[in-house]
Amino acid sequence: MAGGNQMTIFVFLLWGLSDEPEQQHILFLLFLWMYVVTVASNLLVVLAIGTDTRLHTPMYFFLAILSCADILFTSTTVPKALVNIQSQSRSISYAGCLDQLYFFLTFGDMDIFLLATMAYDRYIAICHPLHYMMIMNCQRCTLLVTVCWTLTSLVAMTHTFLIFQLSFCSKKIIPDFCDLGPLMKVSCSDTRVNQVVLLFLGGAVILIPFMLILVSYIHIFLAILRVPSAQGRYKASSTCGLHLVVIALCFVMVIRAYLCPSSSSSNSVQEDTAAAVMYTVVTPLLTPFIYSLWNKDMKGALGRLLRGKVSSSWGK
Image 1: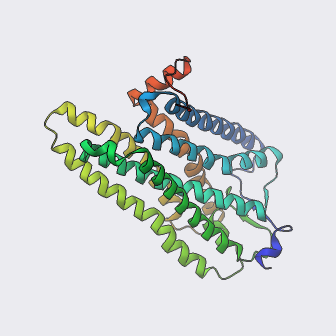
Image 2: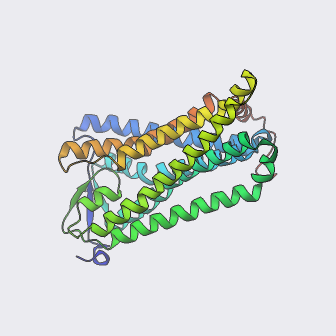
Image 3: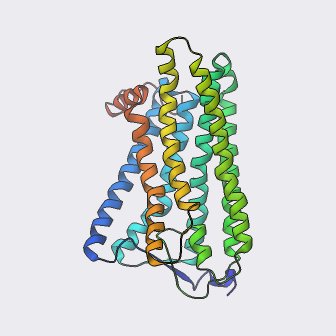
């Protein structure tokens, strides 16, 4: 079957985390709770940054964009999983699967690119503090976010188009989300082109931001070591430590989901599903708490927001 002819008649079956009705009820409540908390916490971060003039800096601007990307990233997959659990249906249409794949890749890659951008921001702030506001001005920040969005959209579009060229001969079982690896595994077409593109393009999406982050933090740590006072070193490294925790969490999940080989056995599919859940649900859930609980400025802004004492508005 050609890809274009499958649009209206083909469906995939999503592999659930459990077949037991009692466990599915628990999973539904757990996923619903995690989704609500993820959206609410990231939305609070965005509102706190937008309504508090103390946080109108490039670092918090990128954090607000990261929170928006996490909301959209989680919303791409979790609502469909919730509907499937509640309705006892595991099907997703061919067109729906391709749509989910495109947005899944776009917002997932956006997280990685934004983390690299935030590392660059910390590098400029610590290594070139006197020129920070001149370099990281509003136009530069907007340009960096626009470049991230454009690149991730192009990457996602390329992968989605290549998947569209594949054929699928019958109902196939894939993990809970439509992703590149599972879709290529169940295709009855030759996927060598897809695999090569995934190796080079996907590798570049992961490795280039990782190398930029690594180089930025090598310079940052060298600069911190040259700070004469212990208080100055602590202040310079505090926000970097939080950023590194988020980076480690994100890249560990990405490496497990995409770079660890797996077989086609049912246990492997379950492991891949669990890894996908960790990457798509747990990481966006933990990120706002990591930044908020250990960041004095964020805690203060969230407290003022919840008390209704804001010092600015989006329009200002």
